[in-house]
Every structure is written in C-alpha cells, then in structure tokens.
Length: 323
Ligand SMILES: Nc1ncnc2c1ncn2[C@@H]1O[C@H](COP(=O)(O)OP(=O)(O)OP(=O)(O)O)[C@@H](O)[C@H]1O
Image 1 (spheres, rainbow, N blue to C red):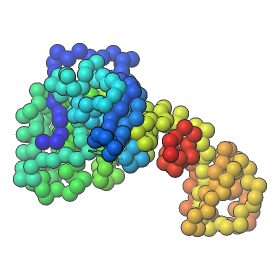
Image 2: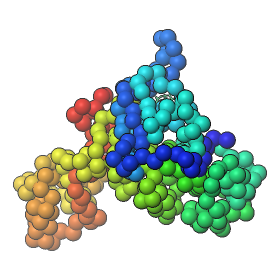
Image 3: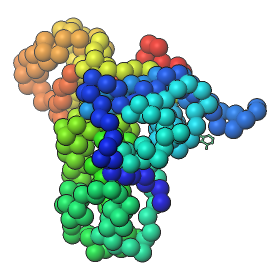
Image 4: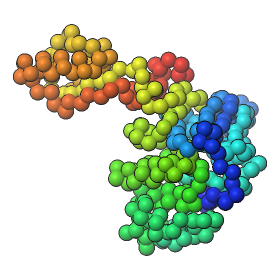
C-alpha cells in the first residue's frame, strides 16, 4: 500500500508554534553510481515552521518528490541532515509514522474494495481514526461510497487517497501533488480541509504545480529548480520587484508612451503590458481607449504575479536561478 499514515501518538511531544517541524540542511540525493549517477537534489536547505502550510513548487524534475521522499524516511539522503518533528526520518520512522500523514505522488489501493471499505480498512491501521462518514463528507465522496475503487475517476480516487492521508488527524502532513487531476470544486474542498488542519495546529508541507493553489493556501513558498531552492518567502515577498501586467485583445495600435509601461508583448492577438505602476498605466490605457472608442476585449489587470517569477525561473532569466 503506497500511502503511509498513522494517527497522532497520544504521548507525542508537541512542538511550540515557533519551532520548526521540519529542518533540512544541505540535503543531497543522487540516483545511481559511477558515470551514470544523477544528482537530483543539490544542497537543499528548508525549514517548515510548526503550524504552517509550506508549498514546494518547481519545474518538472526539479527534485521536489526526491526531497519529500527523504523527509518521509522513504529514501536515505546522499548528504546533509534532515530532522522531522525533532526526529530522524529513517532511524525514527516507526514513531514518525504514528504522527505523520503522507500522500505519495502515486498511490495504489486495491481496485476491488469500495470507497467505504477502503477507508474502513485504512482506519483500522490507525490509532484514532476520524469516522469514515466524516471523511466521506469532507472530501465529497458520500455519493461514491459504495463504488469499487477501480470504477472511480482519477480525481475521485485521488480524493480517497487524500482522505486516507488525513484520517488520523496527523500533526504533520506531507502531500505530494494532492490536487493534481481534481476539478476546481474538488480542489477547493481539499484546500479547505488542508487549511482547517493548519488552523487546528497541524503542519503541512505540500507540492503543487498550481500556482494559484500555492498562493491561496500556503503561508510560505519554496521554489525549486534543478535540484536547488531558488526562491523562498511569502507569495508577496516572492513576487516583489516583478512587473504587474495588463492583458487584453482587440487593440493593435497602442500609444508608445503609456504611463508606467516597461514592455509590450504581443502573442496570438493578445497584448500584455508590463508595468511598474499598475494604476497609472490602467488609467492611461482606459482613457486612451475611451477617447478612441476602442473596446479592449478580455481586459485583465493583475499585480506582480507568482506566475511571472515562476516562468523567469523556468527559462533561467530569474537572477540566481541555475539554467
Ligand atoms: N529512481 C530514479 N532514478 C534516476 N533518476 C531519477 C529517479 N527518480 C527521479 N529521478 C530524476 O530526478 C530528477 C528529480 O525528480 P523528482 O521526481 O524529484 O522531480 P519533481 O520536482 O518531483 O518533478 P515533477 O514535478 O515532474 O513531479 C528528475 O530528473 C528525475 O528524472
């Protein structure tokens, strides 16, 4: 069974809110040996504050899952140190399993059991599982409760896996892409469950490819690229210093001197203005459009976005990001 989960041990020491639930220093992880060896994690430092949600973001192959697997105690580090709830994830794996809920990127349950049977069986491995009906309701699965796992859609199966990872009310939750494949409504349901866990004092470390999810959910972001963490901070801290954008279609001949605009990009009939003075640029643009009776179709204005930072990291133009 690929999901590892157990409920909180009654006697487990609790961390004060200022303590780190996870501390990673100089983590390295290499696959293989000799000339074909590949270093997927190249010196990662990471601190996850107790009672917070941290999102680990990154390009494909950045090393997120490789990092999580060491934190989860599933793989040894090639170098560096990892402390989880003050313990060693490999040597103290038994203790940590009782206090931690883990959702792997790829999980597997028997296809023959129904959703309810799967949750009941999983709950049987936990010290103090939340009731099956409560988990079904939380993840909007009650209508699928008596359906066999093999008949579920990908998104439904993922919600069952999330339910299992959270069923023991763990004090630390590590979720590898919990909402991949979920529709927007289900994704928001998972966000609510994860936020509620944090509000109840749990610590959450998750990976995601959805930037809006990271922005909406996480207290702190860690962006990985090519085996290293290249940016850390709150979403606002990370976006700071990057341009805001105004996008629209339907107006080709723009004036050259729009206030605050630093760059104009045209792509497939859509125009993007980058600006360091969003309000002034918008005012100038709208006055010009009104004066010339031009309709700006699909007008969208947004402050400096995480997306812009992420894309500049991915294409190697962000200062400090390895190519
Ligand atoms: N068992 C393995 N043997 C060799 N290389 C591996 C192995 N597992 C992962 N890798 C490589 O290590 C790198 C990091 O992989 P990892 O799965 O940690 O990235 P990720 O950030 O989680 O990516 P994604 O967002 O695509 O899931 C990738 O280049 C991957 O091909």
